[in-house]
Image (cartoon, rainbow, N blue to C red; front, side, top):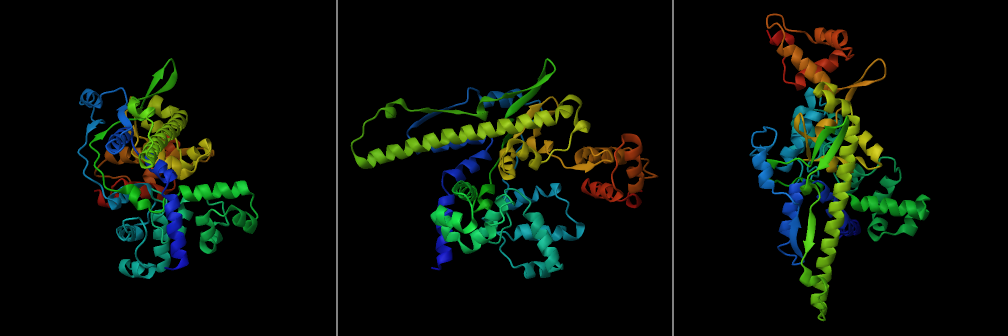
Length: 423
Protein backbone atom coordinates (compact mmCIF):
# COMPACT_ATOMS: atom_id res chain seq x y z
CA UNK A 1 0.00 0.00 0.00
CA UNK A 2 1.36 3.43 -0.93
CA UNK A 3 2.53 5.64 2.00
CA UNK A 4 0.17 8.46 0.98
CA UNK A 5 -2.81 6.08 1.16
CA UNK A 6 -1.73 4.88 4.61
CA UNK A 7 -1.39 8.51 5.74
CA UNK A 8 -4.86 9.36 4.43
CA UNK A 9 -6.39 6.37 6.23
CA UNK A 10 -4.60 7.27 9.47
CA UNK A 11 -5.82 10.85 9.19
CA UNK A 12 -9.39 9.72 8.50
CA UNK A 13 -9.33 7.53 11.62
CA UNK A 14 -8.28 10.50 13.73
CA UNK A 15 -10.89 12.72 12.10
CA UNK A 16 -13.59 10.16 12.84
CA UNK A 17 -13.35 10.62 16.59
CA UNK A 18 -15.53 12.70 18.92
CA UNK A 19 -15.08 15.98 17.03
CA UNK A 20 -16.63 14.47 13.93
CA UNK A 21 -19.47 13.03 16.00
CA UNK A 22 -20.10 16.38 17.71
CA UNK A 23 -20.28 18.17 14.37
CA UNK A 24 -22.65 15.50 13.08
CA UNK A 25 -24.85 15.94 16.15
CA UNK A 26 -24.95 19.69 15.55
CA UNK A 27 -27.07 19.05 12.45
CA UNK A 28 -29.73 17.10 14.36
CA UNK A 29 -33.04 18.69 15.28
CA UNK A 30 -34.10 18.43 18.92
CA UNK A 31 -36.36 15.47 18.19
CA UNK A 32 -33.65 13.73 16.17
CA UNK A 33 -31.32 14.03 19.17
CA UNK A 34 -33.92 12.38 21.39
CA UNK A 35 -34.34 9.56 18.87
CA UNK A 36 -30.54 9.24 18.63
CA UNK A 37 -30.09 8.99 22.41
CA UNK A 38 -32.92 6.49 22.75
CA UNK A 39 -31.32 4.35 20.04
CA UNK A 40 -27.95 4.66 21.80
CA UNK A 41 -29.50 3.57 25.10
CA UNK A 42 -30.22 0.15 23.58
CA UNK A 43 -26.49 -0.65 23.70
CA UNK A 44 -25.48 1.59 26.62
CA UNK A 45 -26.96 0.31 29.91
CA UNK A 46 -25.96 3.52 31.72
CA UNK A 47 -28.58 5.57 29.85
CA UNK A 48 -31.82 5.04 31.74
CA UNK A 49 -34.01 7.74 30.22
CA UNK A 50 -34.09 10.89 28.10
CA UNK A 51 -35.86 13.75 29.83
CA UNK A 52 -37.28 16.57 27.76
CA UNK A 53 -40.28 17.40 30.00
CA UNK A 54 -42.79 17.58 27.19
CA UNK A 55 -45.01 15.09 25.41
CA UNK A 56 -44.26 15.63 21.76
CA UNK A 57 -47.54 13.93 20.89
CA UNK A 58 -49.35 16.74 22.72
CA UNK A 59 -47.45 19.31 20.70
CA UNK A 60 -48.38 17.58 17.45
CA UNK A 61 -52.04 17.33 18.44
CA UNK A 62 -52.14 20.91 19.67
CA UNK A 63 -50.68 22.09 16.38
CA UNK A 64 -52.95 20.07 14.11
CA UNK A 65 -54.77 23.16 12.85
CA UNK A 66 -51.56 24.99 11.99
CA UNK A 67 -50.52 24.27 8.42
CA UNK A 68 -46.91 25.21 9.21
CA UNK A 69 -46.56 22.45 11.80
CA UNK A 70 -47.56 18.83 11.85
CA UNK A 71 -47.32 15.87 9.61
CA UNK A 72 -45.77 16.66 6.25
CA UNK A 73 -45.29 13.08 5.02
CA UNK A 74 -41.94 13.98 3.52
CA UNK A 75 -40.45 11.06 1.65
CA UNK A 76 -36.91 9.94 2.28
CA UNK A 77 -34.40 12.23 0.61
CA UNK A 78 -31.19 10.88 -0.85
CA UNK A 79 -27.94 12.81 -0.69
CA UNK A 80 -28.50 13.86 -4.30
CA UNK A 81 -32.00 15.20 -3.56
CA UNK A 82 -30.72 17.06 -0.50
CA UNK A 83 -28.09 18.78 -2.64
CA UNK A 84 -30.47 19.62 -5.48
CA UNK A 85 -32.93 21.12 -3.00
CA UNK A 86 -30.29 23.77 -2.21
CA UNK A 87 -29.82 24.92 -5.81
CA UNK A 88 -32.51 27.61 -5.56
CA UNK A 89 -30.12 29.66 -3.44
CA UNK A 90 -27.38 29.74 -6.10
CA UNK A 91 -27.03 32.03 -9.10
CA UNK A 92 -26.72 29.32 -11.75
CA UNK A 93 -26.40 30.45 -15.39
CA UNK A 94 -29.01 28.79 -17.58
CA UNK A 95 -26.35 27.19 -19.77
CA UNK A 96 -24.84 25.39 -16.73
CA UNK A 97 -28.02 24.07 -15.07
CA UNK A 98 -27.86 20.70 -16.81
CA UNK A 99 -24.16 20.40 -15.97
CA UNK A 100 -24.82 21.16 -12.28
CA UNK A 101 -27.39 18.37 -12.05
CA UNK A 102 -25.10 16.00 -13.98
CA UNK A 103 -22.26 16.84 -11.57
CA UNK A 104 -24.38 16.18 -8.48
CA UNK A 105 -25.54 12.86 -9.94
CA UNK A 106 -21.87 11.97 -10.52
CA UNK A 107 -20.86 12.25 -6.85
CA UNK A 108 -20.13 9.04 -4.97
CA UNK A 109 -21.87 8.13 -1.71
CA UNK A 110 -19.25 10.06 0.29
CA UNK A 111 -19.84 13.26 -1.69
CA UNK A 112 -16.67 13.09 -3.80
CA UNK A 113 -16.67 13.81 -7.54
CA UNK A 114 -16.39 10.47 -9.30
CA UNK A 115 -15.72 11.54 -12.92
CA UNK A 116 -13.02 13.33 -14.90
CA UNK A 117 -13.58 16.98 -15.81
CA UNK A 118 -13.07 16.30 -19.53
CA UNK A 119 -15.72 13.57 -19.51
CA UNK A 120 -18.12 15.88 -17.65
CA UNK A 121 -17.56 18.63 -20.22
CA UNK A 122 -18.08 16.23 -23.11
CA UNK A 123 -21.31 14.80 -21.69
CA UNK A 124 -22.81 18.24 -21.06
CA UNK A 125 -21.49 19.88 -24.25
CA UNK A 126 -19.59 22.60 -22.41
CA UNK A 127 -15.92 23.56 -22.09
CA UNK A 128 -13.63 22.25 -19.36
CA UNK A 129 -13.44 25.81 -18.00
CA UNK A 130 -17.24 25.88 -17.72
CA UNK A 131 -17.07 22.50 -15.99
CA UNK A 132 -14.69 24.00 -13.42
CA UNK A 133 -17.16 26.86 -12.86
CA UNK A 134 -19.92 24.28 -12.41
CA UNK A 135 -17.88 22.38 -9.83
CA UNK A 136 -17.30 25.61 -7.91
CA UNK A 137 -21.09 26.04 -7.74
CA UNK A 138 -21.57 22.50 -6.42
CA UNK A 139 -18.84 23.05 -3.83
CA UNK A 140 -20.90 25.92 -2.40
CA UNK A 141 -23.57 23.43 -1.29
CA UNK A 142 -23.85 22.08 2.24
CA UNK A 143 -22.29 20.31 3.94
CA UNK A 144 -18.90 21.86 3.23
CA UNK A 145 -16.58 19.47 1.42
CA UNK A 146 -19.16 18.25 -1.09
CA UNK A 147 -17.77 17.97 -4.63
CA UNK A 148 -14.16 17.43 -3.56
CA UNK A 149 -11.86 15.35 -5.78
CA UNK A 150 -9.51 14.25 -3.00
CA UNK A 151 -9.24 14.20 0.79
CA UNK A 152 -6.94 17.21 0.53
CA UNK A 153 -9.52 19.25 -1.39
CA UNK A 154 -12.28 18.05 0.94
CA UNK A 155 -10.38 19.44 3.94
CA UNK A 156 -9.53 22.69 2.14
CA UNK A 157 -13.22 23.29 1.35
CA UNK A 158 -13.98 23.07 5.07
CA UNK A 159 -11.07 25.20 6.30
CA UNK A 160 -10.68 28.99 6.52
CA UNK A 161 -9.37 30.32 3.21
CA UNK A 162 -6.80 32.50 5.00
CA UNK A 163 -4.44 29.60 5.73
CA UNK A 164 -2.18 29.87 2.68
CA UNK A 165 0.21 27.10 3.78
CA UNK A 166 -2.53 24.44 3.80
CA UNK A 167 -1.98 23.39 0.20
CA UNK A 168 1.66 22.45 0.79
CA UNK A 169 0.88 20.92 4.19
CA UNK A 170 -1.83 18.62 2.83
CA UNK A 171 0.03 17.82 -0.42
CA UNK A 172 3.58 17.21 0.77
CA UNK A 173 3.32 16.66 4.52
CA UNK A 174 0.14 14.68 5.14
CA UNK A 175 2.20 12.34 7.33
CA UNK A 176 2.90 15.23 9.74
CA UNK A 177 -0.83 15.87 10.00
CA UNK A 178 -1.67 12.20 10.57
CA UNK A 179 1.07 11.94 13.23
CA UNK A 180 0.15 15.33 14.75
CA UNK A 181 3.81 16.34 14.41
CA UNK A 182 3.49 19.84 15.86
CA UNK A 183 7.25 20.51 16.01
CA UNK A 184 7.95 19.71 12.33
CA UNK A 185 4.94 21.70 11.09
CA UNK A 186 5.77 24.70 13.28
CA UNK A 187 9.41 24.82 12.19
CA UNK A 188 8.72 24.24 8.49
CA UNK A 189 5.96 26.86 8.16
CA UNK A 190 7.34 29.28 10.77
CA UNK A 191 4.28 28.96 13.01
CA UNK A 192 3.93 29.04 16.76
CA UNK A 193 3.03 25.73 18.37
CA UNK A 194 -0.34 27.20 19.40
CA UNK A 195 -1.08 28.12 15.76
CA UNK A 196 -0.09 24.64 14.61
CA UNK A 197 -2.16 22.94 17.29
CA UNK A 198 -5.18 25.07 16.37
CA UNK A 199 -4.75 24.22 12.67
CA UNK A 200 -4.52 20.50 13.41
CA UNK A 201 -7.70 20.65 15.48
CA UNK A 202 -9.46 22.43 12.62
CA UNK A 203 -8.29 19.76 10.18
CA UNK A 204 -9.42 16.97 12.52
CA UNK A 205 -12.85 18.61 12.84
CA UNK A 206 -13.36 18.38 9.06
CA UNK A 207 -15.53 15.52 7.90
CA UNK A 208 -13.59 13.22 5.54
CA UNK A 209 -16.79 11.88 3.96
CA UNK A 210 -19.29 14.78 3.90
CA UNK A 211 -21.80 12.88 1.78
CA UNK A 212 -22.46 10.61 4.75
CA UNK A 213 -23.95 13.59 6.59
CA UNK A 214 -26.78 13.53 4.04
CA UNK A 215 -27.83 9.92 4.38
CA UNK A 216 -31.48 9.31 3.53
CA UNK A 217 -33.85 9.89 6.40
CA UNK A 218 -37.55 10.43 6.79
CA UNK A 219 -38.86 13.56 8.46
CA UNK A 220 -42.40 13.03 9.68
CA UNK A 221 -42.95 16.30 11.50
CA UNK A 222 -41.67 19.84 11.45
CA UNK A 223 -40.97 20.63 15.09
CA UNK A 224 -39.61 24.08 16.06
CA UNK A 225 -36.64 24.44 18.39
CA UNK A 226 -37.86 27.69 19.91
CA UNK A 227 -40.75 30.13 20.12
CA UNK A 228 -40.08 33.80 19.31
CA UNK A 229 -42.56 36.27 20.77
CA UNK A 230 -42.89 39.91 21.81
CA UNK A 231 -43.15 40.92 25.45
CA UNK A 232 -43.21 44.52 26.70
CA UNK A 233 -41.72 45.79 23.43
CA UNK A 234 -38.85 43.28 23.43
CA UNK A 235 -38.47 40.10 21.42
CA UNK A 236 -37.99 37.01 23.56
CA UNK A 237 -36.76 33.52 22.70
CA UNK A 238 -38.22 30.55 24.56
CA UNK A 239 -36.60 27.20 23.80
CA UNK A 240 -38.63 24.01 23.95
CA UNK A 241 -37.36 21.30 26.27
CA UNK A 242 -36.52 18.94 23.43
CA UNK A 243 -34.00 21.58 22.28
CA UNK A 244 -31.59 20.38 25.00
CA UNK A 245 -32.75 17.06 26.46
CA UNK A 246 -31.12 15.74 29.62
CA UNK A 247 -29.80 12.22 30.05
CA UNK A 248 -30.62 10.26 33.20
CA UNK A 249 -27.98 7.72 34.22
CA UNK A 250 -28.90 4.40 35.80
CA UNK A 251 -28.04 4.91 39.50
CA UNK A 252 -27.09 1.27 40.01
CA UNK A 253 -24.02 1.72 37.78
CA UNK A 254 -22.72 4.96 39.31
CA UNK A 255 -20.87 3.48 42.27
CA UNK A 256 -20.51 -0.04 40.96
CA UNK A 257 -17.13 -1.55 41.83
CA UNK A 258 -15.93 -3.95 39.13
CA UNK A 259 -12.77 -5.99 39.59
CA UNK A 260 -12.68 -7.76 36.23
CA UNK A 261 -10.65 -5.59 33.82
CA UNK A 262 -12.79 -6.29 30.75
CA UNK A 263 -15.98 -5.30 32.56
CA UNK A 264 -14.31 -2.23 34.07
CA UNK A 265 -13.08 -1.11 30.64
CA UNK A 266 -16.57 -1.63 29.22
CA UNK A 267 -18.18 0.56 31.90
CA UNK A 268 -15.50 3.21 31.48
CA UNK A 269 -16.17 3.32 27.74
CA UNK A 270 -19.92 3.70 28.32
CA UNK A 271 -19.38 6.45 30.93
CA UNK A 272 -17.15 8.29 28.45
CA UNK A 273 -19.83 7.92 25.79
CA UNK A 274 -22.45 9.50 28.07
CA UNK A 275 -20.10 12.33 29.07
CA UNK A 276 -19.28 13.06 25.42
CA UNK A 277 -22.99 13.03 24.59
CA UNK A 278 -23.75 15.55 27.33
CA UNK A 279 -20.98 17.85 26.13
CA UNK A 280 -22.12 17.55 22.50
CA UNK A 281 -25.73 18.36 23.44
CA UNK A 282 -24.55 21.38 25.42
CA UNK A 283 -22.37 22.55 22.51
CA UNK A 284 -25.26 22.14 20.08
CA UNK A 285 -27.65 23.99 22.39
CA UNK A 286 -25.29 26.90 23.02
CA UNK A 287 -24.43 27.23 19.33
CA UNK A 288 -28.06 27.20 18.24
CA UNK A 289 -29.10 29.66 20.95
CA UNK A 290 -26.38 32.10 19.88
CA UNK A 291 -27.32 31.81 16.21
CA UNK A 292 -31.04 32.36 16.89
CA UNK A 293 -30.23 35.31 19.16
CA UNK A 294 -28.27 36.99 16.34
CA UNK A 295 -31.07 36.29 13.86
CA UNK A 296 -33.68 37.86 16.16
CA UNK A 297 -31.47 40.91 16.69
CA UNK A 298 -30.78 41.40 12.98
CA UNK A 299 -34.29 40.57 11.75
CA UNK A 300 -36.27 42.54 14.34
CA UNK A 301 -38.11 44.45 11.57
CA UNK A 302 -39.29 41.16 10.07
CA UNK A 303 -40.74 39.95 13.37
CA UNK A 304 -42.49 43.28 13.89
CA UNK A 305 -43.78 43.99 10.38
CA UNK A 306 -43.59 40.81 8.29
CA UNK A 307 -41.81 39.41 5.24
CA UNK A 308 -41.40 42.67 3.32
CA UNK A 309 -39.13 43.96 6.09
CA UNK A 310 -36.73 41.02 5.91
CA UNK A 311 -33.14 42.28 6.05
CA UNK A 312 -30.11 40.94 4.13
CA UNK A 313 -28.14 38.61 6.38
CA UNK A 314 -25.57 36.02 5.36
CA UNK A 315 -23.96 32.98 6.96
CA UNK A 316 -20.65 34.81 6.82
CA UNK A 317 -22.02 37.76 8.82
CA UNK A 318 -23.54 35.51 11.49
CA UNK A 319 -20.33 33.47 11.71
CA UNK A 320 -18.22 36.64 12.07
CA UNK A 321 -20.53 37.99 14.76
CA UNK A 322 -20.18 34.79 16.78
CA UNK A 323 -16.53 34.09 15.98
CA UNK A 324 -17.42 30.75 14.39
CA UNK A 325 -16.59 29.06 11.11
CA UNK A 326 -19.25 29.42 8.40
CA UNK A 327 -19.67 25.65 8.14
CA UNK A 328 -20.43 25.44 11.89
CA UNK A 329 -23.23 27.99 11.58
CA UNK A 330 -24.53 26.26 8.47
CA UNK A 331 -24.71 22.92 10.26
CA UNK A 332 -26.37 24.55 13.26
CA UNK A 333 -29.29 25.90 11.21
CA UNK A 334 -29.78 22.84 8.98
CA UNK A 335 -33.34 21.46 9.35
CA UNK A 336 -34.02 23.80 12.29
CA UNK A 337 -37.23 25.80 12.67
CA UNK A 338 -38.60 28.51 14.97
CA UNK A 339 -42.21 29.26 15.79
CA UNK A 340 -43.26 32.88 15.18
CA UNK A 341 -46.50 34.80 14.75
CA UNK A 342 -45.95 34.36 11.00
CA UNK A 343 -45.88 30.56 11.41
CA UNK A 344 -43.12 27.99 11.77
CA UNK A 345 -40.15 29.24 9.75
CA UNK A 346 -36.88 27.46 8.80
CA UNK A 347 -33.84 29.30 10.13
CA UNK A 348 -32.31 29.34 6.64
CA UNK A 349 -35.15 31.64 5.55
CA UNK A 350 -33.68 34.45 7.65
CA UNK A 351 -30.35 34.27 5.81
CA UNK A 352 -30.81 36.15 2.55
CA UNK A 353 -28.42 37.84 0.16
CA UNK A 354 -29.06 41.47 -0.71
CA UNK A 355 -28.94 43.98 -3.54
CA UNK A 356 -26.90 47.08 -2.72
CA UNK A 357 -28.74 50.40 -3.01
CA UNK A 358 -27.44 53.85 -3.91
CA UNK A 359 -27.20 54.88 -0.25
CA UNK A 360 -25.02 51.86 0.53
CA UNK A 361 -27.80 49.93 2.26
CA UNK A 362 -28.96 46.55 0.96
CA UNK A 363 -32.39 45.13 0.22
CA UNK A 364 -32.95 41.40 0.79
CA UNK A 365 -33.30 39.40 -2.40
CA UNK A 366 -36.39 37.71 -0.93
CA UNK A 367 -38.16 41.08 -0.64
CA UNK A 368 -37.36 41.96 -4.26
CA UNK A 369 -38.61 38.56 -5.42
CA UNK A 370 -41.85 39.00 -3.47
CA UNK A 371 -42.44 42.42 -5.03
CA UNK A 372 -41.74 41.08 -8.52
CA UNK A 373 -44.15 38.19 -7.96
CA UNK A 374 -46.83 40.55 -6.66
CA UNK A 375 -46.46 42.87 -9.67
CA UNK A 376 -46.70 40.01 -12.17
CA UNK A 377 -49.61 38.32 -10.40
CA UNK A 378 -51.58 41.59 -10.49
CA UNK A 379 -50.56 42.79 -13.95
CA UNK A 380 -52.93 43.39 -16.86
CA UNK A 381 -52.82 40.04 -18.67
CA UNK A 382 -53.27 41.84 -21.98
CA UNK A 383 -50.30 44.09 -21.27
CA UNK A 384 -47.81 42.09 -19.17
CA UNK A 385 -44.97 43.98 -17.50
CA UNK A 386 -41.55 43.87 -19.12
CA UNK A 387 -38.43 43.41 -16.99
CA UNK A 388 -37.53 47.06 -17.59
CA UNK A 389 -40.99 48.21 -16.44
CA UNK A 390 -40.67 46.12 -13.27
CA UNK A 391 -37.20 47.58 -12.72
CA UNK A 392 -38.58 51.10 -13.04
CA UNK A 393 -41.51 50.42 -10.71
CA UNK A 394 -39.25 48.93 -8.05
CA UNK A 395 -37.32 52.19 -7.97
CA UNK A 396 -40.27 54.57 -8.33
CA UNK A 397 -42.70 52.85 -5.94
CA UNK A 398 -40.40 51.23 -3.40
CA UNK A 399 -37.09 53.07 -3.74
CA UNK A 400 -35.34 49.82 -4.66
CA UNK A 401 -32.58 50.02 -7.25
CA UNK A 402 -31.98 46.73 -9.07
CA UNK A 403 -30.39 46.06 -12.44
CA UNK A 404 -32.72 44.81 -15.18
CA UNK A 405 -30.66 41.61 -15.45
CA UNK A 406 -31.21 41.06 -11.71
CA UNK A 407 -34.97 41.46 -12.18
CA UNK A 408 -34.84 39.01 -15.10
CA UNK A 409 -32.86 36.48 -13.02
CA UNK A 410 -35.31 36.70 -10.09
CA UNK A 411 -38.31 36.47 -12.44
CA UNK A 412 -36.90 33.29 -13.98
CA UNK A 413 -36.24 31.79 -10.54
CA UNK A 414 -39.83 32.53 -9.57
CA UNK A 415 -40.95 30.55 -12.60
CA UNK A 416 -42.44 33.43 -14.62
CA UNK A 417 -41.95 33.51 -18.39
CA UNK A 418 -40.89 36.69 -20.20
CA UNK A 419 -43.56 39.33 -20.84
CA UNK A 420 -43.79 38.27 -24.49
CA UNK A 421 -44.72 34.73 -23.43
CA UNK A 422 -47.15 35.82 -20.67
CA UNK A 423 -49.65 37.33 -23.12
